Image (tube, rainbow, N blue to C red; front, side):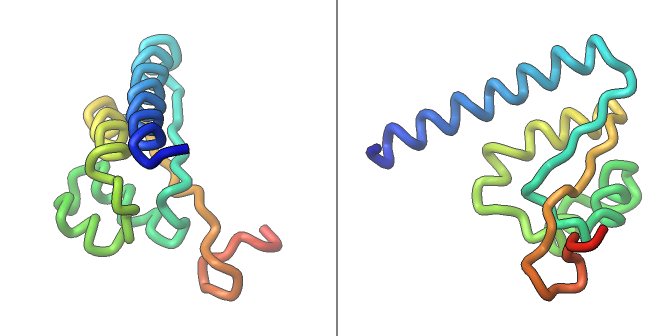
Length: 104
């Protein structure tokens, strides 16, 4: 697979995720979004950002976002924020770290 094709495929996939999220949000007021890109130890900061308690810059300083956050994940996070959809930081951290999920 060439890098160009892979990049185009990822753009389409993330656009589809946004479309599905928007459609589900219209149908289910109890919708919750879980994102593996955020490790569980930043849950409180994610919640604070979604509630408008901290700025996006402050949130991102601590969130360790993936390099493609701005283009691929920010749209769904902002959609969730605008509509009050809870977002779960769902990624278990590397083994041995304080936010690992083993045993939970």
